[in-house]
Image 1 (spheres, rainbow, N blue to C red):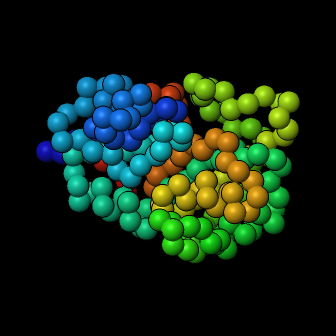
Image 2: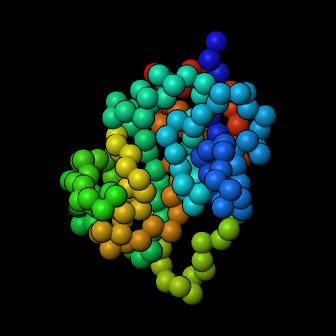
Image 3: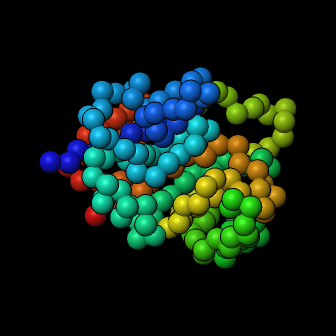
Length: 189
């Protein structure tokens, strides 16, 4: 019988269990919980990103969740006060580079968040107000290219400062703190 977990991946952790020898300074998810053998991350969040990550022993289910069938929603803090024009550009799709090749992102959902979202405090502070204003928006994708959201915000002129995945399908991080792990019966509907 397969086992499934959801975790609020903290800042500074990588979404894998084995790390190349030259990257020993990174923290691994296995340091947070005694996961069963054969567990794998469903998709990835880079070390600088936080939020919802699924872990499973079911490779087929992992492929389904990583497909374009399932939405992934992120809260993004950017440098500066993001404009509606930038939001519209991202919603329509923008050209980003993936492995040196030009890639046009698919249309997505996005909107400005007026109030700073309530999220666990990040282990490493972003910066202070002396460096200028920041703002937040939500973006929901069905694709997930390498560092896609960060590349999208850079293209429209608002570099990402903090990236938190808050939802995959119908599962969210609501009520979870950084590093929390929850065993699940199912991952998504």
